[in-house]
Image (cartoon, rainbow, N blue to C red; front, side):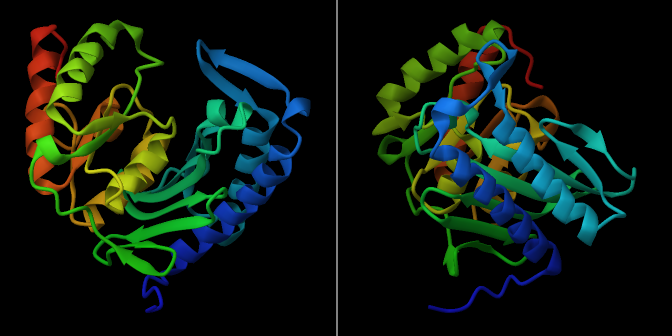
Length: 274
């Protein structure tokens, strides 16, 4: 196995932070019955584990890069207003975690002027570490990863996420889901967008789409896909996904068919592209 050449200091810092957060998560995973769960919005939960994991991440990042800003799911935007901002989801898949469903991850990205430059996604259950830096490829542990070679949507396994935050788009989503159930070999909804995107980058999924995600759900995953040879866009086929929350991704060929299918139903129900 070739060593991972992606040893950029920013990645090393993010890996350290992600592993610290994972330690908090793993300890709590053995005592789920003791968790205090708060509701931020319908179907959107936060636990003391989310907050403690986020605090560990921020501590590491502040110590290493005090000049960088931070955008985190639980604590919001803090720190200097410079061109570099860390975008953090301390526990993507909180609902899964609460139920002991082993599909959740820590996601950390460093953006420059709003564009992801470095990415780390860590799955503490599988001990899988996904890393990427712009222009340097994407890796799973120490192995270079690429998107799958699938050429047709009809051969594709596609991931998705239900629009649990934006219920006004349920009809458009269900139309997409119904159509793509027939056009693909299968749809999967594991419940952690960061891992879904990492799975596209590593070839486990051939495509993915979701409505209404937050920047911390996507920032690391989209860079992984781009560096693994895949395409990412919003529903207009542009790069506004971190701003509008609507994302479609996939292998180059699958992406095109998937985007066209999604656009058909998005437009048919009068939804704005961005």
